[in-house]
Length: 304
Ligand SMILES: C[S@@+](CC[C@H](N)C(=O)[O-])C[C@H]1O[C@@H](n2cnc3c(N)ncnc32)[C@H](O)[C@@H]1O
Image 1 (cartoon, rainbow, N blue to C red):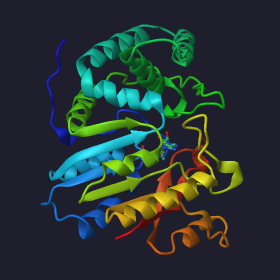
Image 2 (cartoon, helix red, strand yellow):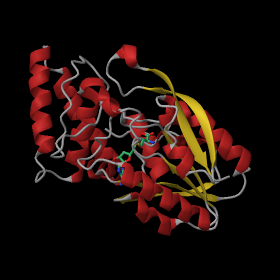
Image 3 (cartoon, protein in one colour):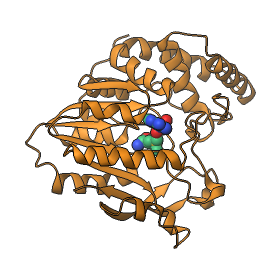
Image 4 (cartoon, rainbow, N blue to C red):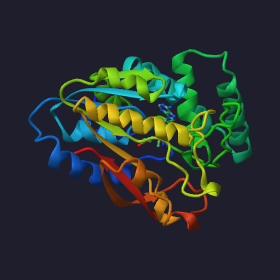
């Protein structure tokens, strides 16, 4: 079966990703459009911590003058998924339709659970499949695991439990085609954020969304990969922002407002004192207990 290609206007994240930025988009957009771009001049967009890509897709929809994008993430399974959508959208859709049909056909939750656990084991066998199969498993697990989280343990194994959803949408062909369209103008990299600097040109905007510094020691969710993003990485990121600034490019970085929990904690205020810091409200969805979700402050650091 072939699927027709909808407009870029429908592009949105094809995975649910912890730290997704949909809530912060209006704030990012207002800094960007007021101070950086008048919607006419072509510009390059670089996102070194792409995750689910909500900001990338939003910018592609909003700024027709976004000429090219460079995206990067250290998570190889995630980047393989972007590459697969860029190159093999129809094959991916066909395979997702098959796995969706198989899952829907299991007539009780115990069988669905068993099916989920088999696929999770398969995904964790790293000597395994080609890029399309790997992406099918990643998307399947994301749509059927508890709360759509992506989390790995210290050995790098995906360990989110079964979500008990009866008929989740596993194959979203429309989204895959629209993401495919955006990716035609996008260079996709897999590695540490620092490698993206070499792609900057005269008119480049960086949006940086690193794993957040935990707001309190008990609340750390940084397990996108087996290596955690600690304070030394936050300092390295500050050095990276300085380099962006020295090359006359613009950046916005989002991070947690650690002062929200401890008024005396001036980690970011000190580190970024030569830049602008806006405090903004954002809804976080990482905590699995509904009662603990809510609006808390985040910071946007920018050099313009
Ligand atoms: C907060 S998430 C980004 C969320 C994204 N903005 C969204 O809307 O879904 C942070 C991302 O940084 C990636 N990451 C962690 N350490 C990294 C590093 N050293 N270099 C590049 N990416 C890294 C993680 O794999 C994760 O996808």
